[in-house]
Length: 423
Image (cartoon, rainbow, N blue to C red; front, side, top):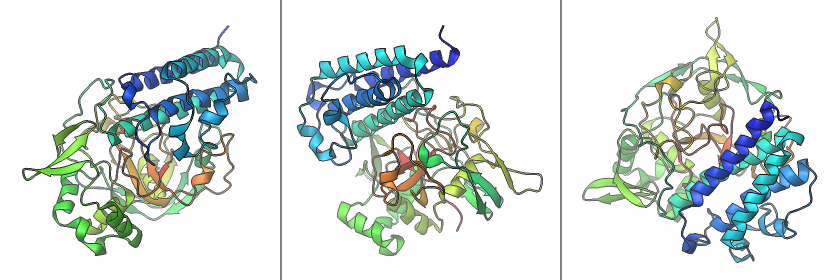
C-alpha cells in the first residue's frame, strides 16, 4: 500500500509536469527552436532536458532502470552538451518529445514507492527551476505570457523605511536534517554580524526611475569598473524592457508595453545596475548573510540575534497571503503587499515577488561537499553572484530563507530586483 510520502511525491511529479506542459502549450511551432542566444535554450531542447533529468535521476540512478533512449545523454545532458550546439542537434519532433515526457512521468510515479525520495525531490525542483526559466525566455523573446496566473498584480502602495537588525551570532545555511536541500546550502554555520539597517521593501520602479532620470547611467563615478565596462558594452541607458514614450516610461511585460507602476519593485536589472543605484542613493546592497539574517533571524531575550526561522514568517509553508509565488499573479505586486509574510524585523516580501541581488559572490560554505548532481553548484563558484528570496514565478516548494540562487552579475533576464542597506 502506498504511504503518505509516496502519494505526496507522486503528486509533485504530476504537478510539476502539468506546469511544464501549461507553460509551453501556447508556443507556436515556429517558436519551438527560437533564436540562438547565450541566455536562453531552444525550447524544444529544454522540454526534452526536463524529461531526461527526471529519467536520469529517478529511473536510471535511483530505480536502476535502463535508459529509455540510447541517444538521451547525447541530446540532453546539459553538463556534456555545449550550449551553442543545442540548436543543431537531431532533436526528436515536438510530439515525440512530449511522448517521452509522458513515459518518464508514468514510470517515475510507478517507481516513487521504491526509490530514495531525495531523487524525486531533486528532479521535481529541477523541473520547477526550468519552469521559471521558460518564463524568462518568453520575456526575453517578447512571447505572450502563458495563461496560468489566476489574478492581476496587487496595488498596495509603497513601504518606505528601514528595519533594524541587531548584531550577534547567526546560524546561516541549511541543517543536515532538512528533508531536502541543495548542496550549496550546506553546511549550517555560525556567522558574526554587526547590527545593520535594511530596507523594509525592495526598490520600486518610481525610485529607480528617479535614478535613471538623474542621469545615473551616464555618471561614471556611480559604477564599479566592471559595471561601467558592462554598461558601455551593453549600451544600457535604463533597465531592460524600459522605453520612453511621450515623456513617460513604459516597461515591457512579455509581449505588451505598460506604463510603470510606481510602487511595484523594479525588475530585470543586473547586479551592476543595482550597485550603481545604491551609490546614487547613498546606500549599499546587503551581503547574503545580512539578507538571510533579516529574513530568517529573530532577536533573543538580550536583544541580540538568536534563533532562526525556515521562512520569514515562521516555519509554516508559503501561502498566497504571505508571498507572491507559484505564478499566482501576472507579475510582481506592489511592495506593500503581503504584510502577513513579514519577517521578525518587519522586512516584507523576502520570499516571492522578485529575486534580490546581494553583494556576495557565489562561493561554497565551509565544508562544502558536492551532492549527487555534482554540476549543480561547483562549476559556478567564483563567477556568479548570489540572489535570494524567489520571484512571483518561483514555485513555493522550492524556496525558503536559506535557498541560494546565482547568476552572473551582468544578467538582466531573471525576475530580479534588489533592496538596499544603510551605509
